[in-house]
Length: 104
Image (cartoon, rainbow, N blue to C red; front, side):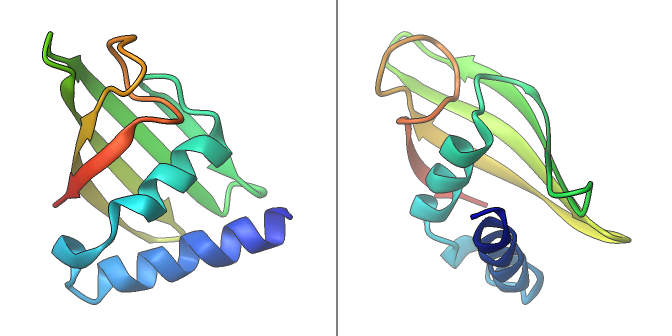
């Protein structure tokens, strides 16, 4: 199972690295959040440190829209993205089940 996660994340990183970050579907990030068990800000490691995902969650507004900065590092390269999300469960933070609205 972890092998498929790593393959999926690396596939996502190839898309991001090719300069089409605006076209990365929010669904991929939503699935990644659930798989990593994200609850707000933190650093999450996939495999034996092959991929590191760092999240700084700015929290959600009273209307339920939030932003977070996500940095994905793999080897000597990486990328940083801003996620805008709908706080679906109204807990004020980014977590599994929230809808990623955009990735830039």
